[in-house]
Image (spheres, rainbow, N blue to C red):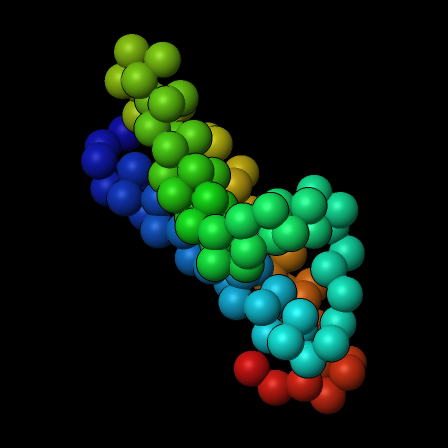
Length: 107
């Protein structure tokens, strides 16, 4: 594998987490409730902006980098967690989008 896959998987993870955060913020601003108890706790402690930073820096960036370093700079060790984080973010973002659409809330 080459660095292209690291960059592509990082972009996938970051955009996935951003899609989740963006759609969550829109839903919360229109009176919908957060369905994730852990996210609710973090939002109460550090706010929605703090949670967005935590997810985008911690999950999408720091987690894959630490895995990469602990695996002695194995590119696959970066790509796998980054893709997993991206899939989780995209699934949550799409789920949130469908909920917004159902409630006639536009982005």
